[in-house]
Length: 384
Length: 231
Image: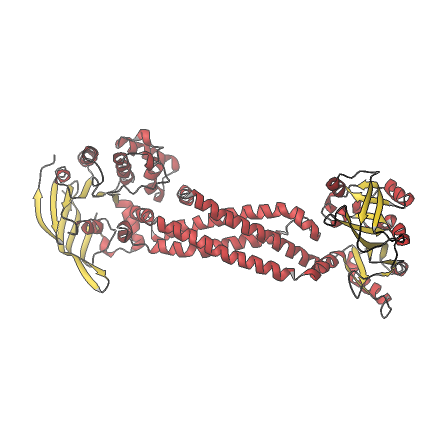
């Protein structure tokens, strides 16, 4: 501890350089935290078999449709408690870039399968009595400044009404406040509309839905119930694929890109570049301080002690910046992670980040530390 | 008087590329405890090499170097570092203070290698800064001090661990006459009042006049020894 002042002073000898190096490390670890956090969340979802909900989609394609009549058959499977059907409406508000994730549902079954949404009995009644009704979560309402009673026109390039137009008007009948643990779910920013109204008004694919969300009695039976549901429709024109909810979300994301590969490649490239930045900073710092290090040796510091000072300086530089980067990543992840159904950076990512920071410190600090250790006092004092 | 430094047939050769250059040729020297010795000689004569060997900063190619009863030519890097910390206080021509630390922190650096508590270290630093007349500049960084003041801090740093031997390499070489005179008087006072043994390398005959003995080094040999009375 008594050497801390010496190390700290050495670290801030060139403030601008130290700050710039720290910023590079902070940005790198922010990226590391976000990308690995997303990657880990997706992989955790894929491996999660202890879900209390299952998703059933068409086997041929995730966004393929199935007859709504399958719902009654699914309800007959032992262990299934409730089933809600969801159909993708898509849509945008005013401009195509204002994407609104709208889904057509039966509000009663949605509220039963997703109690975390906190949909009230009054809101269920209001949806039932208002065919053009729409139910939204507080975050979506706040984003657009919408309130109960507002009439919201949504455009869509997918669904044409029977009158030939593509603009659908909905009346907001309720704004729900989800439970805190569900606050990051994409469902809280979904625009929920009545399936019956939408199905009767659209031109095509009537009586078909895109997904069943199934609430089950025992999460441990998720795999068995999934198999039982899929078996029901085996060799029929509407074969299904049932999987735990988190796994289904993760699988959908994986369809877009190999996130594992992308995340690891970007993080690997960034860390490789960072290694050179940090190593060159430390080398330059030591090179400039050769006479000072020689003075320390003259005063009685051993080669090992001087190299330990340099290594510790490298470790402090890397660890402080990495911790700041990971903290920023965990704050940003509250927003970014919600897209992937994750609320916080998995702790394993933070641990991995700290290990990478220590490795970075050792690898970048070792060459200058060895140079400091081998420093010949006489030559260094003579600046040879 | 007790012999503090003894050099027997000391040879020092440096390898410069493929050439071996002999800088010291069989030097024999004895320095008594409590002496203030000036080593004079032209540039390249070998006086700084001689000083470095006595201070344990370098090892002789041949011969024996005994300081404070220890054959330091036999000590390895780590042991030699410990020995230096215990026995040697070094004053450089260009002060060589750590620019990011205050005067007090610079003086404290050698004490970090001891087991003294923080409070005791601070107490010793205060005492030695008072001794060199810089107690009021303790919180100043080197860049905020004059050359003479920086050299006083450097002397305080050399003294703070109470070394056996004070080794000064051109301590007035970077100072004007007035500041140089003050530093030399300070060294003289340390020798006279504190009993410190001092070896000082200098080009300046006026500086050497402050020592109790002057030796001349030329082309790697001690060519002349003249005992002078202390100024």
